[in-house]
Amino acid sequence: MLKKRIVAVVILKDGLVVQSIGFEKYLPIGKPEIALEYLTSWGIDEIIILDISATKNQLPPNYEMIRKASKKCYVPLTVGGGITNIDEVTQLMHVGADKVSLNQACLKDLTLISKTAHIFGNQSVVVSVDAILTDDGYRVYDYVERKTTKLLPSEFAKTLSEEGAGEIFINSVDRDGKYSGFDTKLIQSICENVAIPVICCGGAKNANDFVQIFSESKVSAAAAANFFHFTEHSVNITKSIVSKVTDIRVETHADYKESNFDQDLRLLKKEDKILEEMLYLRIEKEVI
Picture 1 (tube, rainbow, N blue to C red):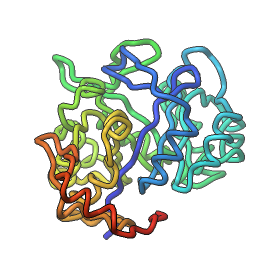
Picture 2: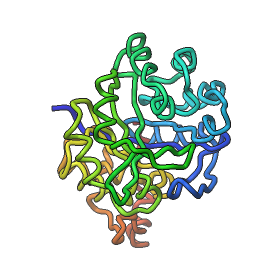
Picture 3: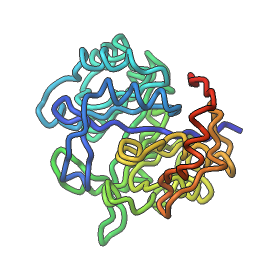
Picture 4: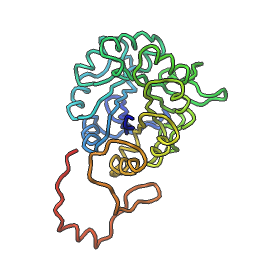
């Protein structure tokens, strides 16, 4: 049985990493290469870069930015945003991407999926589906046009799979930046309709949300963006907690057994006496 994966999503807007809230509000965080360097060193399994401004501004992918950022990344890297043809896919692969994430291109023309899969293999094609809950149920959301389509996410995901997608990245618009937990009903509806791996995103607040979605759905990977950027020890703590109940890759010796957490699973400061004793302990720097 394949191990479940913990994935970090890096949202880019006009060249900067941003915090996304409900697909409407964006707060700047910093430079992409720094974000990738930290996430890699913290032991994340994969990173997905999504440039949400490229397609809106009718720009191609920023190849130089991806080249620079990918040099700081030592885990599988997926890149999305601004991709409209196979030449752009090829250039992204040449500057450091291991996979591409297609979104807008698939709302207009599905052939880019099969073209990419034919040249680079199905495993290199991740199709991102933004879903929103309406009065008529879940529907696919077009973030560029800022409108809800008539497409049902589960049926659309099946079509994408049949066209050659290697993975489906399902993102809940309603939960984006809300820290309200993953949308289990939406995610499970996708998992039940496709035979390929599904990555879920949207709503993760802490490690408990990862534990819950892995136990309540057949999702292959769970992803988060804001949570990993703003929470101390976020990747390591998440993995230490999830690994107790789910088979995931853990490459650190930090198990946090003697650590205390608050109700949101944020790491609490140790007592002063313990910290004073730790001054005399030799702790080798861990390279993950």
